Length: 181
Image (cartoon, rainbow, N blue to C red; front, side, top):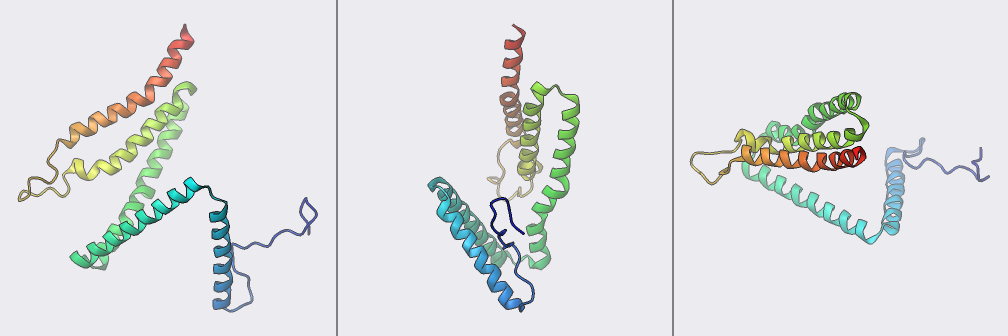
């Protein structure tokens, strides 16, 4: 079997070949992954490498903070797994369906000129709600330490949401006014 260029198609390197022992298949797969990563690093631009390094350092720092927290507080396996899996589950089971349903609903109701701006602002609002929920609910506030959560987070959140909608809706409004003239 040949491809359009007349040469044989390249083998699928995403999975280890069958028929060998598990360890040799793992080594072969790791070898192909190493080749793919080194090729990606060689062909990536300087900005991408800097961003990848910054991301890797951020993940490493977060992992160290989690390790320190686990070793210091010893929440137990259930507490640790609840914290570790809770965020992704909330995003996957709550946020993503809300975003999809909202986008489909808005796509059917809104005119095309306003659709992208409203959907973008709604998505940013949802993400901001997920980030701000602990602050808005007062999670972590303690009476013995008044410096924890010492601001009016509801007011600040309302101002932020207003700014998001303002930034999202001004450009289509300006375009609509210009088109009307």
